[in-house]
Amino acid sequence: MGRAAYRPYAGRVRIAFGADDDNEVTRAVVGYLSELGEVVRVGAAEPWPEIGAGVGRAVVEGRADYGVVMCWTGTGTAIAANKVPGVRAALAWEPWIATGARLWNDANVLALSLKRLAPDVAVEVARAFFATPQPDPDEAGNIARLSTLEPGPDPA
Ligand SMILES: O=C(CO)[C@H](O)[C@H](O)COP(=O)(O)O
Image (cartoon, rainbow, N blue to C red; front, side, top):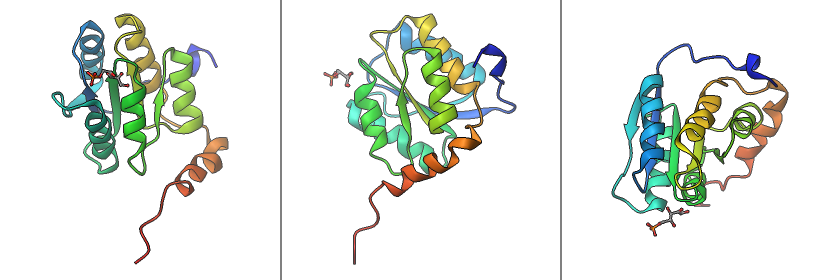
């Protein structure tokens, strides 16, 4: 899977973005996302669980096509986003992981650490995520299986 496999997005994408802190890494990522499409900011002043879940809800409710969450580790917002049924949030720290999350997991939310990635690396990871628009068709069964693991509605 080399760089030649990456394809740019055809149209403008709507990206829900939430972070529980603001630094040069979050600003670099938001700058890149703003070039890519429309950035829908979610819950800047809220604690990380609300930010992660808020971004997840924006995606599954169709207010955004994808989400990006950031916190110190990236893990808390990823966990919170994954509590929302229909979200497939993936923590990535290098481009190959982000590409694989799109290809093999159809991840719809990218989670990044705002403390442990350099700004240019964070942007490269996001670029890899958004340059991979279609999941691998061979993984369709496994990706569909994920939704069967989600809790169903409470019995009446
Ligand atoms: O990485 C995080 C969660 O995984 C948070 O960003 C980190 O724990 C800081 O949170 P708070 O400002 O609420 O102490």
